[in-house]
Length: 461
Image 1 (tube, helix red, strand yellow):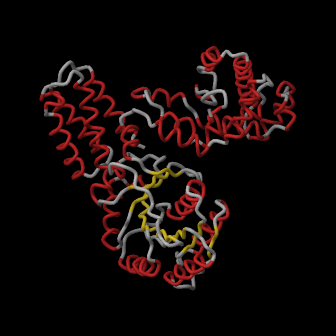
Image 2 (cartoon, one colour):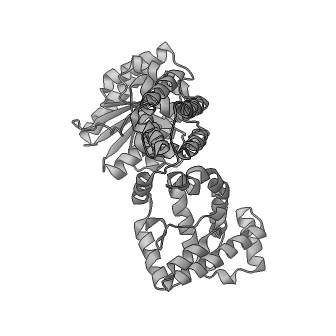
Image 3 (cartoon, helix red, strand yellow):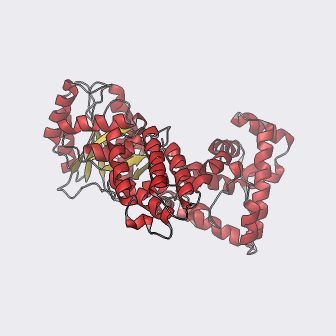
């Protein structure tokens, strides 16, 4: 997400930073580039006009024209205005209500409502220590009820059964009453979607809202729909008192128009953003961090939070101790490091949050290959426990069996074993205190050119 916008703005920033002083002419040129970048990102025209006008007013002032670093000041203004149109700061869920607090999910069909219900339940359980109950009021798609039941089991949340014969509002009332008796903290209510907005849909969800009396009514929208997402959110807001928006599928080919348009058009905050298919792949939406990411400045705070929440710290500590004691680095260790990266959104996801990448992001991403990492994990999973612990025993016939087991070629197995040998040498150096030498040796040695960890304990250190 934001790749095209980031590229255009990064080039503009680079040109401005090279200027000893800024004039009205080169500010106008820069604003023209900013305007084109936003339009290409499918940001709503009204939002683009407001944004460019606000940047222009500040850029033409003394703050920029008399600065010793005018280019940097201009980019700072762009960053601040990006934050402003996206909502200044993250707005948390308001769960300060007599339990159970009810969260109602609304949106069109295919936006990812059902999956988002489970993702939010997982997040509330892990980070807020809330007990959650999931219920489906989608009586038109029996598969939707079964899907939510399966997801509830996956995230270890309670599920309240419903059926297509019931009235959606009655389902919500019964689920909330059950949650009250069971002392459940939060009830997440999934609702039916349509391919387009219609009066029947709106009447039904109004009825569910009146019955459930939710503390939060979240509009779930596919970020790949661009500025149309903002228009759809506005239509829902006219029917329901929305309290916030959840952007889904931000890891897809989304240009960023939805994120930059919704708050300005609807006045509703983006509270969460879905960044992948995994059940953990949802993040609180922080406008300041997203603005930094758009301008290629990285997002260290989100990176630190991901490490805290998504890394198995006990396993990382065990690995660190093993390396320090010089006990070797086997294929189980390599697999653990790969899986930690995948839990963090893959190498490409990590790079997006790294500061200082700037205009090099595309070049670095071109060397990063998450598919290659998944293949490496598949190869290791095709091995016996003995082969993982003692890779040196893997010869011709074993290589052929492993390759057949994971559907890859013998040369892929050879490449993994070579990677492992190189890593084993690095870890041996590190156990002797040679961190600097190890980091130099890592360069370009791993799949896609990236190291498997960020320090002696992998991603946990």
